[in-house]
Image (cartoon, rainbow, N blue to C red; front, side):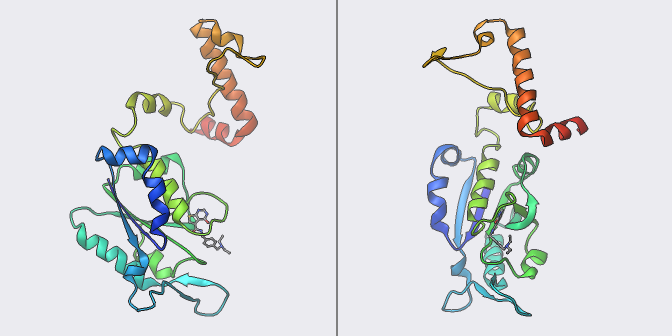
Length: 231
Ligand code: 9D3
């Protein structure tokens, strides 16, 4: 997968892209990142990316020229693919694992990081294929949201994670929270691991885990149980 990221803060990305799974995915050739400083695509010498709102009101908007120029420059360099252009914005569809899986099937993404009060509506209407939010809280811009999207999508690319692990996980994904997990020592500062997990009785262990997962989901995320019942 090729991922182009358009942002006024390209330096924010290097620490995230150069650690852990994302770094390994690049080393394995599974993903390649191209960072674009939006100010390089401004038509004026002041490198201005924002402007006031027509009709009045407080705050500034991303002006259309730099974003259109940036996306067009990226498209002209990558003619083979038809990239999916994604705007990170609080008005977007709320990200979930199903959307991550769909995005992981794309050959190329162009991620646009919004700022200020938002973007000129012509960007949304004529440049963007999909608008994504990462949840109902206010960020200062789209950069951290783009990193969340990248992290959740790159780990799904074939060959990035051990496939055994990921397949195991799929069967439960989105339905239930996980049961509690323990590792050694069996007794740590007088806090004991539940007896059943040390019993070697795999049927009993499976039943305990199922029950714990249900209990935990009921307590913390009843919304997930409702969805599981419907699906
Ligand atoms: C006063 C209205 N605000 C909307 C809640 C304006 C506004 C606040 C923050 C507009 C943009 C932003 C910057 N946020 C993002 O660009 C953003 C975001 C977010 O704030 N929350 C969750 N997901 C995302 S994706 C991009």
